[in-house]
Amino acid sequence: MQAFRKFLPLFDRVLVERLTAETVTKGGIMLPEKSQGKVLQATVVAVGPGSVNQKGNVQPVSVKVGEKVLLPEYGGTKVNLDDKDYFLFRDGDILGKYVD
Image (cartoon, rainbow, N blue to C red; front, side):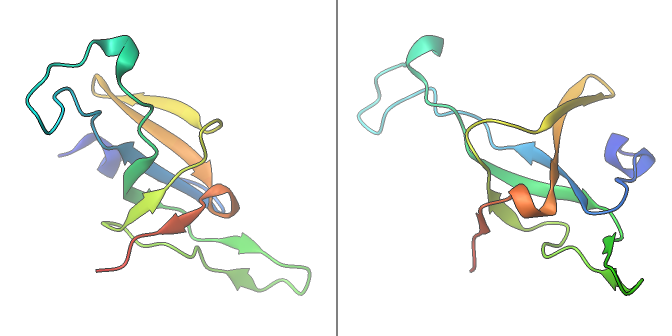
């Protein structure tokens, strides 16, 4: 069983796995860790059921498991599951999603 299947985000939280940083340029030059840009793209691995609005209705999360999203540069809560790092964001903090 995968780690994120053991963890269910609550309310409007979204659990994501950041994409790995580029370690080699297109020209084949190896980049040192300090020169690698912060990765702002991630894949959604789990979503909460949504938040409850003032009328008591559940407002579903706007992203689905498997979608690629754009994250803010700062924020999110780091979650370590089975020695792998994931990040937890509120649905409203996610900047956008990539469409095929």
